[in-house]
Image (tube, rainbow, N blue to C red; front, side, top):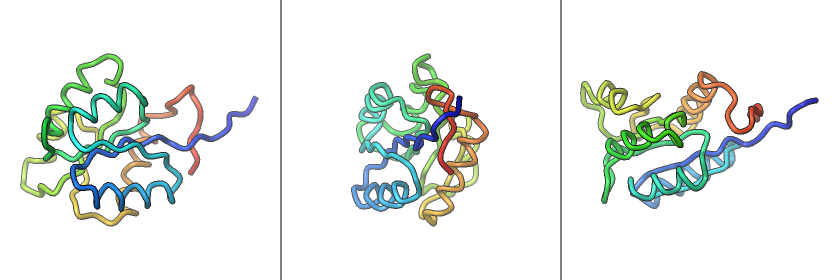
Length: 139
């Protein structure tokens, strides 16, 4: 019995609509389904509702920042296994270590080339193995 490849579902969390639009367009072109959220509270709700395969989390967000949203996602049994990649404009020393301590599985500094983001998403997904229903992903 063969499994049909599925498009990985990405939750993209960024408070800038232009950034969400640009990344969503490129990610969909690259074979991903994308759900969007504009702040940490929306991110928690979307993660519970849609159960994405991976979350791209801006760390500087209104309402609830990405640090706290990531900690809450990793503390909840329903979302703890979803990998989170920090997507941030903070390039300061120590930020990537802090993101890992908060529960992030990867780290990408903005601005980044869309293909670099896709490469990081695939690397993190590959390291976490098959997700939804044990199916393999489209490459």
